[in-house]
Picture (cartoon, rainbow, N blue to C red):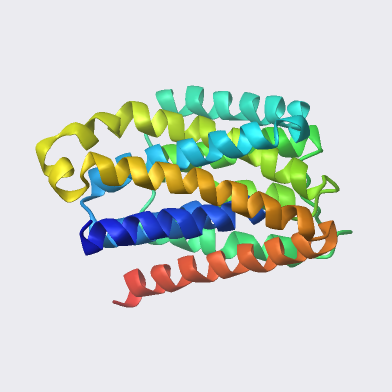
Length: 248
Protein backbone atom coordinates (compact mmCIF):
# COMPACT_ATOMS: atom_id res chain seq x y z
CA UNK A 1 0.00 0.00 0.00
CA UNK A 2 1.36 3.42 -0.96
CA UNK A 3 1.69 6.26 1.53
CA UNK A 4 -1.22 8.17 -0.03
CA UNK A 5 -3.43 5.08 0.15
CA UNK A 6 -2.47 4.56 3.80
CA UNK A 7 -3.33 8.19 4.60
CA UNK A 8 -6.74 7.83 2.92
CA UNK A 9 -7.56 4.64 4.82
CA UNK A 10 -6.35 6.05 8.16
CA UNK A 11 -8.31 9.27 7.61
CA UNK A 12 -11.44 7.25 6.81
CA UNK A 13 -11.04 5.30 10.06
CA UNK A 14 -10.36 8.24 12.38
CA UNK A 15 -13.02 10.53 10.93
CA UNK A 16 -15.64 7.79 11.06
CA UNK A 17 -14.87 7.26 14.75
CA UNK A 18 -15.50 10.98 15.30
CA UNK A 19 -18.76 10.76 13.34
CA UNK A 20 -19.74 7.63 15.27
CA UNK A 21 -19.42 9.52 18.54
CA UNK A 22 -20.92 12.90 17.66
CA UNK A 23 -22.68 12.34 14.33
CA UNK A 24 -20.77 15.26 12.84
CA UNK A 25 -17.42 16.76 11.79
CA UNK A 26 -15.93 13.52 10.48
CA UNK A 27 -17.13 14.03 6.92
CA UNK A 28 -15.99 17.65 6.93
CA UNK A 29 -12.46 16.70 8.02
CA UNK A 30 -12.32 13.79 5.58
CA UNK A 31 -13.27 16.11 2.73
CA UNK A 32 -10.37 18.37 3.65
CA UNK A 33 -7.90 15.48 3.67
CA UNK A 34 -9.10 14.08 0.34
CA UNK A 35 -9.23 17.50 -1.31
CA UNK A 36 -5.59 18.09 -0.39
CA UNK A 37 -4.56 14.87 -2.12
CA UNK A 38 -6.93 14.23 -5.03
CA UNK A 39 -8.58 15.99 -8.00
CA UNK A 40 -11.94 17.61 -7.23
CA UNK A 41 -14.20 15.08 -8.97
CA UNK A 42 -12.29 12.13 -7.51
CA UNK A 43 -12.56 13.72 -4.08
CA UNK A 44 -16.33 14.15 -4.39
CA UNK A 45 -16.78 10.60 -5.66
CA UNK A 46 -14.63 8.91 -3.02
CA UNK A 47 -16.02 11.10 -0.24
CA UNK A 48 -19.55 10.22 -1.32
CA UNK A 49 -18.86 6.48 -1.33
CA UNK A 50 -17.08 6.44 2.04
CA UNK A 51 -19.61 8.71 3.73
CA UNK A 52 -22.62 6.91 2.29
CA UNK A 53 -21.35 3.59 3.63
CA UNK A 54 -20.43 5.17 6.96
CA UNK A 55 -23.77 6.91 7.45
CA UNK A 56 -25.81 3.95 6.25
CA UNK A 57 -23.97 1.66 8.66
CA UNK A 58 -24.46 4.18 11.48
CA UNK A 59 -28.16 4.33 10.61
CA UNK A 60 -28.47 0.55 10.70
CA UNK A 61 -26.66 0.28 14.04
CA UNK A 62 -28.89 2.93 15.65
CA UNK A 63 -32.06 2.36 13.58
CA UNK A 64 -34.23 1.96 16.68
CA UNK A 65 -33.37 5.54 17.67
CA UNK A 66 -34.34 7.33 14.44
CA UNK A 67 -36.93 10.06 15.07
CA UNK A 68 -38.96 9.58 11.92
CA UNK A 69 -41.20 12.64 12.14
CA UNK A 70 -38.08 14.84 12.24
CA UNK A 71 -36.71 13.05 9.19
CA UNK A 72 -40.03 13.43 7.33
CA UNK A 73 -40.28 17.18 7.97
CA UNK A 74 -36.62 17.61 7.03
CA UNK A 75 -37.27 15.64 3.84
CA UNK A 76 -40.24 17.84 2.92
CA UNK A 77 -38.07 20.93 3.29
CA UNK A 78 -35.34 19.30 1.22
CA UNK A 79 -37.85 18.47 -1.52
CA UNK A 80 -39.06 22.07 -1.58
CA UNK A 81 -35.49 23.30 -1.98
CA UNK A 82 -34.90 20.90 -4.87
CA UNK A 83 -38.04 22.16 -6.58
CA UNK A 84 -37.10 25.81 -6.11
CA UNK A 85 -33.51 25.44 -7.24
CA UNK A 86 -34.68 23.56 -10.33
CA UNK A 87 -36.40 26.82 -11.35
CA UNK A 88 -33.98 29.44 -10.04
CA UNK A 89 -30.29 29.70 -10.91
CA UNK A 90 -28.28 31.12 -8.03
CA UNK A 91 -24.61 30.62 -7.30
CA UNK A 92 -23.13 32.57 -4.37
CA UNK A 93 -19.47 33.49 -4.37
CA UNK A 94 -17.24 31.13 -2.40
CA UNK A 95 -16.33 34.02 -0.09
CA UNK A 96 -19.99 34.69 0.77
CA UNK A 97 -20.66 30.99 1.24
CA UNK A 98 -17.77 30.56 3.69
CA UNK A 99 -18.77 33.75 5.53
CA UNK A 100 -22.34 32.52 6.03
CA UNK A 101 -21.16 29.10 7.20
CA UNK A 102 -18.70 30.75 9.57
CA UNK A 103 -21.24 33.10 11.14
CA UNK A 104 -24.18 30.69 11.57
CA UNK A 105 -22.64 28.85 14.59
CA UNK A 106 -23.18 32.08 16.55
CA UNK A 107 -26.81 30.96 16.72
CA UNK A 108 -25.98 28.12 19.13
CA UNK A 109 -24.63 30.63 21.69
CA UNK A 110 -27.67 32.92 21.72
CA UNK A 111 -29.81 32.73 24.87
CA UNK A 112 -32.56 30.17 24.41
CA UNK A 113 -35.20 32.83 25.15
CA UNK A 114 -34.03 34.61 21.97
CA UNK A 115 -33.70 31.65 19.67
CA UNK A 116 -33.65 27.92 20.15
CA UNK A 117 -33.32 25.83 17.02
CA UNK A 118 -34.70 22.37 17.67
CA UNK A 119 -35.06 19.49 15.25
CA UNK A 120 -38.15 18.35 17.18
CA UNK A 121 -39.96 21.53 16.14
CA UNK A 122 -41.67 20.69 12.80
CA UNK A 123 -41.14 24.20 11.41
CA UNK A 124 -37.47 24.16 12.38
CA UNK A 125 -36.96 20.73 10.80
CA UNK A 126 -38.78 21.86 7.65
CA UNK A 127 -36.75 25.08 7.41
CA UNK A 128 -33.56 23.20 8.19
CA UNK A 129 -34.20 20.73 5.39
CA UNK A 130 -34.85 23.58 2.98
CA UNK A 131 -31.82 25.66 4.00
CA UNK A 132 -29.28 22.86 4.22
CA UNK A 133 -30.39 21.24 0.97
CA UNK A 134 -30.39 24.56 -0.83
CA UNK A 135 -26.89 25.22 0.43
CA UNK A 136 -25.79 21.76 -0.65
CA UNK A 137 -27.18 22.26 -4.14
CA UNK A 138 -25.18 25.44 -4.70
CA UNK A 139 -22.03 24.51 -2.81
CA UNK A 140 -21.86 20.82 -1.96
CA UNK A 141 -21.77 21.69 1.78
CA UNK A 142 -24.73 21.17 4.11
CA UNK A 143 -23.61 19.50 7.35
CA UNK A 144 -22.82 22.64 9.39
CA UNK A 145 -26.35 24.01 8.96
CA UNK A 146 -27.97 20.65 9.69
CA UNK A 147 -25.94 20.37 12.89
CA UNK A 148 -27.49 23.57 14.26
CA UNK A 149 -30.84 21.78 14.54
CA UNK A 150 -29.40 19.27 16.99
CA UNK A 151 -27.25 21.38 19.31
CA UNK A 152 -30.08 22.48 21.64
CA UNK A 153 -32.59 19.70 21.05
CA UNK A 154 -33.90 17.44 23.80
CA UNK A 155 -33.31 14.38 21.64
CA UNK A 156 -31.00 11.78 23.16
CA UNK A 157 -27.48 11.42 21.80
CA UNK A 158 -28.40 8.14 20.08
CA UNK A 159 -31.43 9.74 18.41
CA UNK A 160 -29.31 12.63 17.16
CA UNK A 161 -26.67 10.34 15.68
CA UNK A 162 -29.24 8.02 14.07
CA UNK A 163 -31.52 10.71 12.62
CA UNK A 164 -28.67 12.78 11.22
CA UNK A 165 -27.15 9.64 9.71
CA UNK A 166 -30.35 9.11 7.72
CA UNK A 167 -30.28 12.73 6.53
CA UNK A 168 -26.65 12.50 5.47
CA UNK A 169 -27.01 9.11 3.76
CA UNK A 170 -29.60 10.60 1.40
CA UNK A 171 -27.29 13.46 0.48
CA UNK A 172 -24.28 11.23 -0.12
CA UNK A 173 -26.33 8.84 -2.24
CA UNK A 174 -27.11 11.69 -4.62
CA UNK A 175 -23.39 12.52 -4.75
CA UNK A 176 -22.62 8.93 -5.76
CA UNK A 177 -25.22 9.09 -8.54
CA UNK A 178 -23.55 12.18 -9.97
CA UNK A 179 -19.86 11.42 -9.41
CA UNK A 180 -19.60 7.71 -8.59
CA UNK A 181 -18.58 6.59 -12.08
CA UNK A 182 -15.50 8.82 -11.83
CA UNK A 183 -13.87 6.29 -9.50
CA UNK A 184 -13.84 3.77 -12.35
CA UNK A 185 -11.97 6.08 -14.72
CA UNK A 186 -8.28 5.41 -15.40
CA UNK A 187 -6.98 8.62 -13.73
CA UNK A 188 -9.02 8.00 -10.58
CA UNK A 189 -8.03 4.35 -10.41
CA UNK A 190 -4.40 5.43 -10.64
CA UNK A 191 -4.86 7.95 -7.82
CA UNK A 192 -7.11 5.72 -5.72
CA UNK A 193 -6.86 2.00 -6.56
CA UNK A 194 -10.13 0.15 -6.04
CA UNK A 195 -8.64 -1.92 -3.16
CA UNK A 196 -7.83 1.36 -1.39
CA UNK A 197 -11.39 2.61 -1.85
CA UNK A 198 -12.74 -0.72 -0.59
CA UNK A 199 -10.43 -0.63 2.43
CA UNK A 200 -11.50 2.95 3.21
CA UNK A 201 -15.15 1.90 3.15
CA UNK A 202 -14.44 -1.12 5.37
CA UNK A 203 -12.51 0.82 8.01
CA UNK A 204 -15.12 3.60 8.00
CA UNK A 205 -17.72 1.02 8.99
CA UNK A 206 -15.39 -0.31 11.68
CA UNK A 207 -14.86 3.24 12.91
CA UNK A 208 -18.60 3.71 13.27
CA UNK A 209 -18.74 0.66 15.55
CA UNK A 210 -15.86 1.99 17.66
CA UNK A 211 -17.44 5.42 17.83
CA UNK A 212 -20.78 3.89 18.77
CA UNK A 213 -19.22 2.14 21.76
CA UNK A 214 -17.69 5.40 22.94
CA UNK A 215 -21.09 7.08 22.43
CA UNK A 216 -22.63 4.54 24.81
CA UNK A 217 -20.18 5.57 27.52
CA UNK A 218 -20.69 9.34 27.48
CA UNK A 219 -23.65 11.26 28.88
CA UNK A 220 -26.19 13.28 26.93
CA UNK A 221 -24.92 16.41 28.72
CA UNK A 222 -21.30 15.90 27.63
CA UNK A 223 -22.50 14.98 24.14
CA UNK A 224 -24.43 18.26 23.75
CA UNK A 225 -21.61 20.38 25.16
CA UNK A 226 -19.05 18.80 22.84
CA UNK A 227 -21.27 19.25 19.77
CA UNK A 228 -21.68 22.95 20.53
CA UNK A 229 -17.91 23.47 20.61
CA UNK A 230 -17.35 21.33 17.52
CA UNK A 231 -19.93 23.35 15.56
CA UNK A 232 -18.15 26.53 16.67
CA UNK A 233 -14.71 25.19 15.68
CA UNK A 234 -16.00 24.27 12.23
CA UNK A 235 -17.48 27.75 11.88
CA UNK A 236 -14.10 29.29 12.69
CA UNK A 237 -12.42 27.25 9.95
CA UNK A 238 -14.95 28.63 7.46
CA UNK A 239 -14.27 32.18 8.67
CA UNK A 240 -10.53 31.63 8.17
CA UNK A 241 -11.20 30.44 4.61
CA UNK A 242 -13.46 33.44 3.98
CA UNK A 243 -10.75 35.80 5.24
CA UNK A 244 -8.15 34.07 3.08
CA UNK A 245 -10.31 34.59 0.00
CA UNK A 246 -11.11 38.19 0.89
CA UNK A 247 -7.59 39.31 1.75
CA UNK A 248 -5.39 36.68 0.12
